Image (cartoon, rainbow, N blue to C red; front, side, top):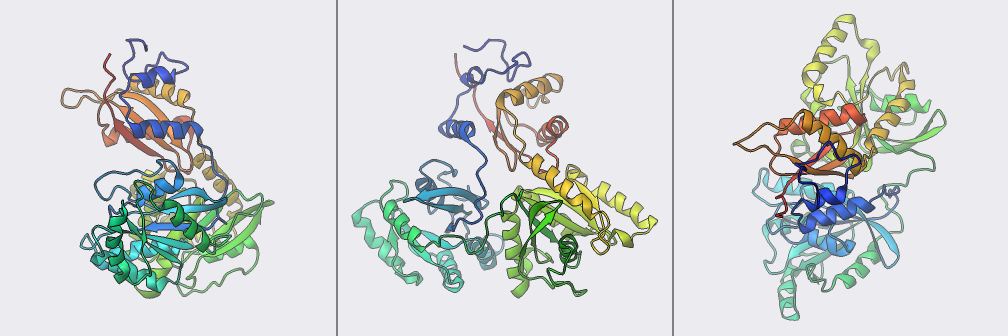
Length: 486
């Protein structure tokens, strides 16, 4: 039994005895799965060439349950209420000897902040990344208006689609699945993701639709450290920078903003290292406010960010920071990608503008001071030689991993020196912590109570001081748990 002196993470434990610490906590099933996954997890190799199978549908139809069934483990969070999955999450999967990527997505519903356009935007963003699609519906509910909307999008996308009629738990319920013919996507495939009924046959059919290699992404060339997405507003110099790095005219550059529409992949050697750069369309406005070609350019840019390891956000240093610049930076952070910030067109700045720029950064970008910052001129190639060092630094921060023992020892000292403020007569304590993943670094803290957002930011700040994490966002999750009764 752990020492009765243990209150949260004791600074006296060095090294930390993880088993003793965990024995003090009333863990739930998903906690154990998370910890077991953390113990065995490794950085997966580049999966860029693997075909992508997307799982889409409205909320609470069983998408994440199906993802877990395909993976053979509980990787996606499943709860009885809708909307648990918020973002697109990739997993590497295998069936019948074939490797592929599985794309789990959030659910979409009509009538929630945006109506039809929100459904269309989210569905098309996921479809954009996929070679084939599993469209999951609830056979017991039948075809809803949201299902009809997604079906219309799928009919236009010209990609292989399997219409999955989920929650068909017995033969007598297969008649419910037949009603989904009305969606116009062919024969519904009856399935029970929860019980596994029909899942093997579904995967056989899905594997048959997938190409050997993805048509929408390529594997990294040998020796390449990662993918770099060049993003920013129109006309900030993304294509000019790519040409400057390549030493040739690889992509079209024009004074007219918006010349680039489709992401352009280029392998460019810098000091003998082959980097894969992706030039993207300039982001003009929020995707939901875009129309026509701009809308689809935004979708492809979003996909490029999610495919990348590190994003280089280009800013026009000669112009004041715009709300669109801030929004693009937030998109990179939300996607969990490493980031390098670039002030381009430095040759156009005078002393007054440089002073104003520093003030703008202090006021608007202080929350990303962890990102490497380069001042350069793509047009003259001034300071472009600093790019490789910044990219390597950001990727190293993104892949940083701290052992569980070291992390708990560090947090033990931190909590002893700066305990959480008392709230409502109680003081939350950190009982155990672990880093569940790198790229991006994600930490889970088991606590006796909710941690104030300001205290989480304090922990993040001190983690950066101690371990760097230069160029990488940090994700900190808190799980409130009870102490185990003695």
